[in-house]
Length: 264
Ligand code: CO8
Image (cartoon, rainbow, N blue to C red; front, side, top):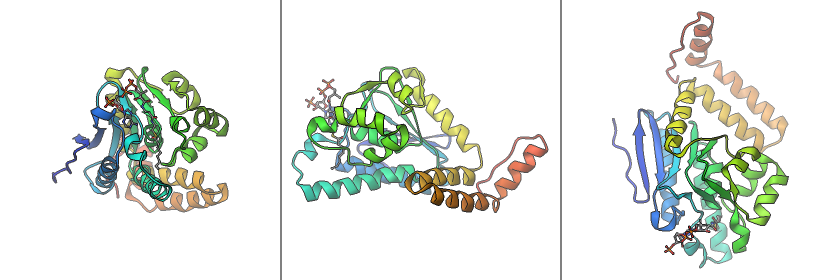
C-alpha cells in the first residue's frame, strides 16, 4: 500500500479502505485556519485519487467540538479583498469534499458552528451525537457564512429554516437538526464514527461509477435548473450502462447472487 499523506492539523487514517479524516486543533476547538483548510484539500485530493480509498468520514478530535468554525483570530484582521479571496479559497476546499467522487459522511461529535457547519454540509450525509450543537453564528460576528453555507443550507432544508438559523445565529440541538433534515441520523457518541464508517462502507459496496454519477447528478441538479439536471441525469444514466459493474449488478440481481463490483 502506498504511503498515506501526513498532516499537522488532521489525522488521516485508513480503516479497511475507508479514510477517517479527523480535524485536530484542540486549542481552538478544531477551528479551521488557513493551514487546516490546505490540509483538508490535500486530504480529499488523496481520497479522490487513491484507488485504495473507497470513501471517507470527517470528524473532529475530542469530545467537545466537531469544528467550531473558521479561526476567528485569523478572520479578525482581514480586509474585504482578502476576505473575498479567502471565501473563494474555502469554497474550493469544501467543494473538494463534495466532488471527490466517493461517499463522504460527517460524524458530528460536538459543536458544528459557522464554517464547522459549512464543512459538514459539504459532506453527502451527516450523523450527529445527541450532544452536538449546530449553528451559523456568523451574524453574531457581523459576517456571513462564506464557505458555501448560504447556498448549501437553503438548498438542503429550504429558505425558511435556513433564514431562521442564519439570521439569528442561534444554535440548534441535534434533535432539531434531525427534524430540519440537516442531520440524517442521531447516533450515541461511542458508536458515531463506527456508524458513519458502516454507512460509507455500505455505499462503497455498490457500483462505484454509479455512486459517483448519482452524486454528480444531485449536485448538478441542485446547482442548475431542473432541466439541466434532467439532461445531466440522462447523460450519466447512459454512462452507467458503459460500465462492467452495471452489467455485473443487473446480471447478479437476475441470477439471485451477490454482485462483485470492480469499479470499471
Ligand atoms: N476560532 C478561534 N478560536 C476559537 C474558535 C474559533 N471559531 N472557537 C473556539 N475557539 C477557542 C476559544 O477562543 C478558546 O481559546 P482560549 O482557551 O485560548 O481562550 C478555546 O477555543 C475554547 O473555547 P471557549 O473557551 O470559548 O469554550 P466554551 O465552551 O466556553 O464555548 C463555543 C464553546 C460556544 C463553541 C465558543 O468557543 C464559541 O462560540 N466559538 C466560536 C463559534 C463561532 O462563532 N464560530 C463561527 C466562526 S465565523 C465562521 O466560521 C465564518 C465562516 C465563513 C468565513 C468566510 C471566509 C471569509
